[in-house]
View 1 (spheres, rainbow, N blue to C red):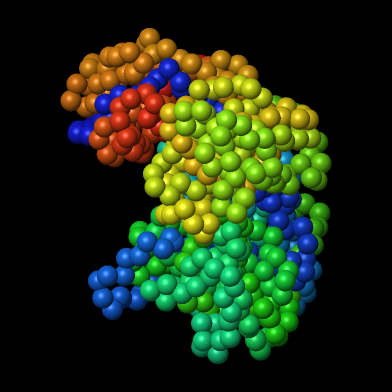
View 2 (view 1 turned 45 degrees about the horizontal axis):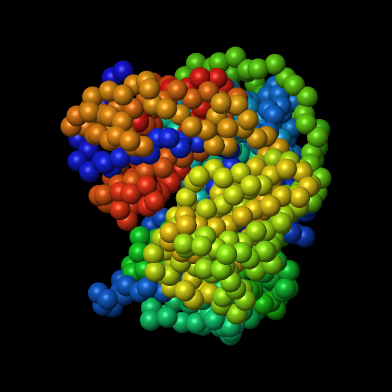
Length: 639
């Protein structure tokens, strides 16, 4: 097996390969509100929203060089619909531009792209076969159109071609598992072809509902009289929200529900673009917005900025519907969820006309001369035979279940801290613990989100479900302090049974763990992995120990470019899909790197491993890497 062995000078000294596990789970998910189709009501009744991050820093230079601050800071596939059943929608407005909605999964699917249900979306886009979905958009007027769509599985790369013009832009979705993204596209007065696909290497995100409409004003071009600068208007800071040294507002959310209230008077009701300047120097963060006490039904995602320096600030844009000339806009978040620091806020009118949509009968198949395949795509592979669509889950299945750790059974010295809102003294020599009883209506895979504080260092945490000890020690990243406002959220995937379940939080019997507070559970899938690659499987690396790679007790050492050390693992999985490859490791150098190849295809990224406190097994950490595996046997090569 011949790989491009680039010089990697600081590879980690050893990886623990006796605990490599695969599992499907939703990453970085706060809740499952996107499981319900977003665009099921007229637009003038429900605000529309998106996450559009301008990756170019704000054009503003700092006044000095010391602006750094420590303040925050597989469902079963259903059939690939033939083109003749591609459903599209037309506007019912006879005197307005065309506005319509559809699901990208109803397009022409090629190269292995498939439809998933619950919620309906297209999966297997991109990857080595470059799966694609092509939709056809009939327009009555040429120009710039706003295109807003649901995505699932963030941090993936997506390309979009319009009318056979190959895209030079690769879009990377924000890190949240589910979200909404928008772009502006130029459409002709005709039948427009729009193709969604990947970069030819890595998987693209799953895509669901999409809305396309032409507004009276381009989203990015506003006249001065359309603009309202809220930073000069009346506002109020609630609870812990306050200005920091950069004149940005921090402390939104937190234990005391910090918030910003903006008293906003506008000349016209309609669709507005809300622009927020922000800093998020440690991680991706999120924010919630309500208008006149009516929450917008989404969590807005803010991508990480380079640091907390003013020159690293970015713009965030979202579309909102304002139905009154006098309004209170509230920016807030859930307790314990990381939020950005907020700077200048502005509001600009996009369209003063209400926009409505209506489903019509499916349009006929487009002219066969229109080729729906991107120029960069390989030859199509046969599609599987159609199978029946599984029934939708009950409406409350995707509602997150919220628990408080303090309501659990405390044992072995664990006790309540911080005004009885967090549990401390987990772990330690007595292995302090808290047992939480949870009840779910459906067996399956769930995302477990834990609000925690760990103000001095990464602290170990073990989690057992129904008395099953997977021998995994998690090390949630340290928080900025032990203050409520600095709490973070740590997520893992767990398999739960229908009915009562017990989740135990404890430690490594040596060190004390983090303080934990609010706990939430969100349903991912009724599928759990029970074959060779179960939720926790052990693999002995007997095949492919090449070059300098050797087994040293519980670890493998010598994985490096100098000695051409390579480890090959054989993994048997029950179905096609994205799996999480979890590697227990120790490393005595910072930013150690590896590369991975799956079935003779090298993945494009280097995977960086943080330095561990020591190289003792008790200080090992877990690195989660998403890999795309095929049903049956797969070769995973680490080098």
